[in-house]
Image 1 (spheres, rainbow over the protein chains, first blue to last red):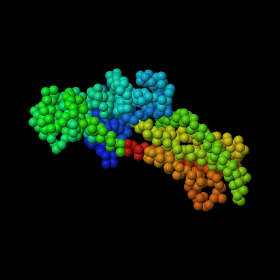
Image 2: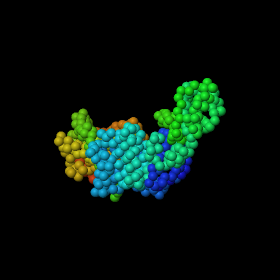
Image 3: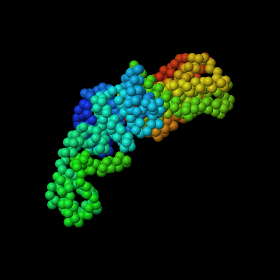
Image 4: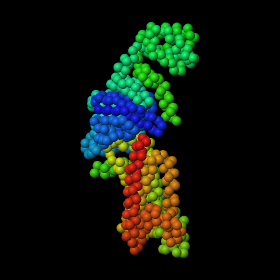
Length: 322
Length: 257
């Protein structure tokens, strides 16, 4: 339903997309997971015909995004990261105008508007201007507007960013329902691991404008064999003393040290921890905390992007803030 | 047909937004009345200047104030577009199948309705203070048409600028930079025979003056309709050019999204 190949896009000196590509099967939720600034929103802008790629090609619902933009626009619903709600119009007026611009008219449009307002729990607030809506209500209105013309493909760009945990959970149930009941194909971008894990049947992990790993959440996690061991050190790694200490520990793989954090992978976490601690102790590296965990998407990201997700997210945020 | 219907739907949207700002409506309606009364009082002795034709300054002033009002308020039309850009509304509209020009035409439709209402308020006020419109109903209509056409052109320019600059400060700067010079480089307040010749020359190329000359000609006795329709034709061409520019400006915006 969606195909992207070799997408490139630069903004001045900043390379937002660097050969990004993936395929999305119909009737599924596909997740683009990555930290802020990885290129997710740029990808959505290109696939929804708002922006043009510098190179590469893409089709959505069988139409080329560059040559058949008008057809793509009729087939897609878009819920952008920034809400596109007109705050001076009522909820009803917003949905109705969107339907009108999608070519709907008359009673068909009115019925569809009522149906959506009901479905998204906005019927009571339908005659209030959207300025008075809560964040969760505005988000639901955004989605209702995206669905008014019954699109085949729905783009959800960071749909739950900035929402309370309860509202987020309700939004997740709503997105699952859309896929199950309406057979929609959904492209979801998120920088929440949990969200991708819960909603997406297929995932592409995006880092610095490229897909670094692709598969179902389960596949991605099982591709990392064994458990993750995370050690937080008391002080920074001095002259590679940590690596030196761990060289002799059997079964320890993919050792990575970043600042005070040490990440490694072992077949059996519980049995390996004493050996790791003993080795660090014998090289006088003090340890603050140790955790052992089954592989998570966090670990998947760390493995394929070569840096921890939280760290990448923080760095990108800093860059964006400048 | 679809595009015209879209333009109308977007006009209604902007009128609704306007309607929900009562303070703004109050200012829009009161301001032109203040211009008319204030300038009428302030410059009433202008008629005593040797060479001034006619005995009542307010009579002379009405077309100038009417056109100036439409010109001033239209310059701010692009502010809605900047708000839409900031709120993500423009991006949403651009990924619907709607054509580009209705997105501008909707703004211009709302602006035209606003300029029309302001003009009617001024005409009513003028009649109330004893100004006579010797060109009859057609004259009054053409005066208002000239003002609305000029407003349409500058509203379109304002939107083009909004899409290119994308910042309130830039738009405010550009609009205030243009407003007063273009108003005073015209015959709004002083007859052509009494202004310096270089100002008169510049005024010949100033669309604000085209609207003032056309409007004043239309409402005086012994109207030369050729002048009226000639300048209105120029204003139509200018408004179309500005609308095309504004529509093209979406490309400039999308190139950097």
